[in-house]
Image (tube, rainbow, N blue to C red; front, side, top):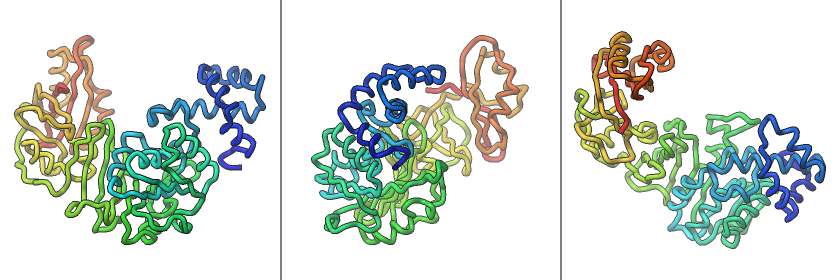
Length: 395
């Protein structure tokens, strides 16, 4: 039995009969309050095991809707769905492989990355050691109408069979969970990062990693791309050999805009006091260590050499930063902040801090704001040798 499924339940979920029940279950509320009643309704016509599988798939499909545009017709395993990449990120990554006709997806899981790769290359070999994941991946590839471009192989990604020879490039998304817990140690990935790098040394290889990966453990001759989506750093991608961009070691890419910047860009920018606008670099920019490059590109300046905030006289037209009009610059004193908020009818302050050692939650709990009025952002930060508070309005 794989992932709690008996062979009979697995076959049922892949059958046409299950489609009818899954469609009916989609109309059930499936809330904690109705869960017992919903499962009892399904059990009137299905075995307890089949009813539980339909319930689980329906819940997983709802959860997967934020990642997959066709989630309502796909089949999932909970662990595989947790690791699966959002479609925009998977398609962004797949475009890097466009020059390689034949690509192997090592550890394909439920097929999300294979589906994205199939839109960019001529042929994909999707490899996984688990039969259930492969069967679900076949189903999902059919949902996306790319089944004809993907050949599914039951094999260990580190010991590929003969039919996987003569491949142009490789992609791997090693499992970073064990026993339901996430691991941050690349030696504990499955397969381990070291094993992947050794097995595919000299090959064109892309590896999806956690965005918080320690750069010092990665090969020096590689390109590391940090990708954010919706302002949150979602993944790091290690590009090697033919997939790496010559002369670049770090890249930040902001999705869905698709704007990118690398360490090859000019990083000469001054340090100065706050202007009319405060600019907060995107999470991918900060994680990739490219704040200075963004400042130089957008004509901004640093407020402090060690603080990831930028400033200028006009808003920057770029997804690489989030901009705010600075309405007031105050001393970092709670009394001054509260007085300004009441006098200017501010009913809510979203607190951010950099370099002050203060906790935003603690500061927020001590604010005494107006009962009615507007919402603003309070930025507590170190500017060179001083601590200041900025009252800002999001642009």
